[in-house]
Length: 263
Image 1 (tube, rainbow, N blue to C red):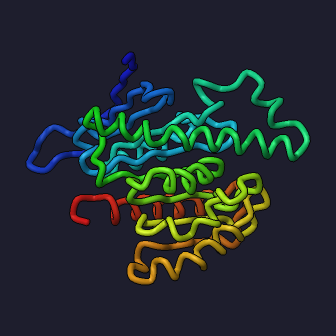
Image 2: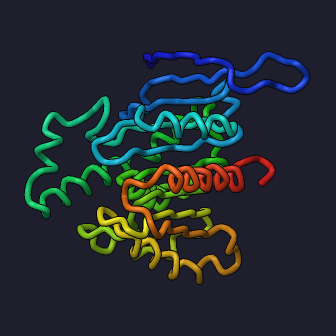
Image 3: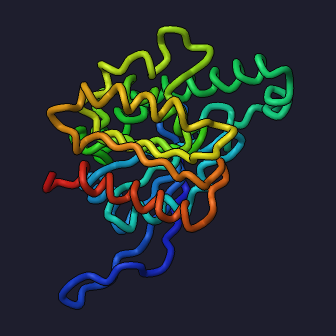
């Protein structure tokens, strides 16, 4: 499996005067999915602490979330940025055309890419585990906007996912019928679920996530600490930096709480 690897300067000084760890980035493919692996030091060791998949937004690509990947790695995780189907290294040549037609056609094209991306998650996790880059007890997923849709669907697709943090996404899918995540509330537990939305988001309104969490409270009654919904009332889909920083800090703390070995 061909890959390209680069190391970037020292970020973390080890106790006892040891050499500092270096941030490592490696682009490769896991199955059909192009990925960007980011870790402090050895990726296998990071994966034993926890492996987190990160999915980007619509028309974006995995490298666009390098800052977020770096901060996940900085907490000791193996961060795996993934190009969604039709994006990044495998962008559809006519992607812009698919997203510029009648609203119903755009919705269908969007959801087709979401579903195809979700379908890859089990084999992607299998590859990470088989290569010693993940522990099946410490698998997490997060995603932004379109990646948030992927996150809701993926945690139902692969029950090995221990913690999930969809960002600016929706569990209510207009074209999914009975397969829409918001209609499968009985299947979320025990995954630790943190949903975060923007109160003034007109692209992905916050109501569906808010409603889902209201329904999920019954299913998480025995473990309420594993369920949280946070809404930023003054933010739109493109959040102010201060709100985004708070949001991302919540994501990091969520994975530290529910993925790390002491848990």
